Amino acid sequence: MRSYTCVRKGCYHEIIADTTPESPKWNDGHVCTFKPTAELFLERSCREKMGFLREVDVDAIASDEQLRLQPCLVRCNRCRFTAPAQDVKWLIECVEKNGDWCRDVSVPANDPIWQKLGLR
Figure 1 (cartoon, rainbow, N blue to C red):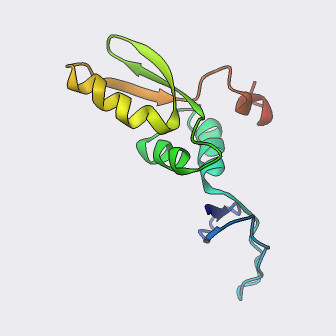
Figure 2 (cartoon, rainbow, N blue to C red):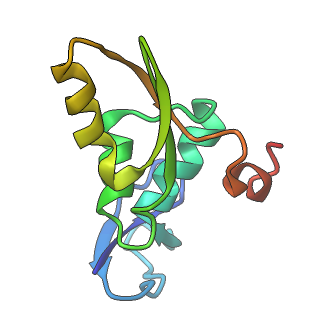
C-alpha cells in the first residue's frame, strides 16, 4: 500500500491504495490527479527548497517501499556522507550520540531526479 496525494495546488486529498487511484470528480467540480506522496515530497523539495529535506520529507520517502533507498546527503559538523533515506534517521542519531550534530539533509547533486525535473 502506498499513499497518494493530489498534485493540484491547494488540494489536499490523500488516498492509500495498492495502485495509482482513478481520478475522482468531486462536488466542487475539480478532478484530482494522484501521484505517490513520497515522490511529491521529493519533487517539491528539489523545486522549492533546492533539494534540502525536512525530517517529515525524509520520513515520507523512507516509508515508501519504492523510494526507501533514495540516496540522501547528510552533512554534519565533522563529516558528510550519503545514505539511503530509510537509514538517515538512525545514522543521525548515531552521529549525535557521539557529540556531533547534523547540519542538513539534501538530495545529492548527481541524483537523476534533477534531470527528470529539468533542474540540471
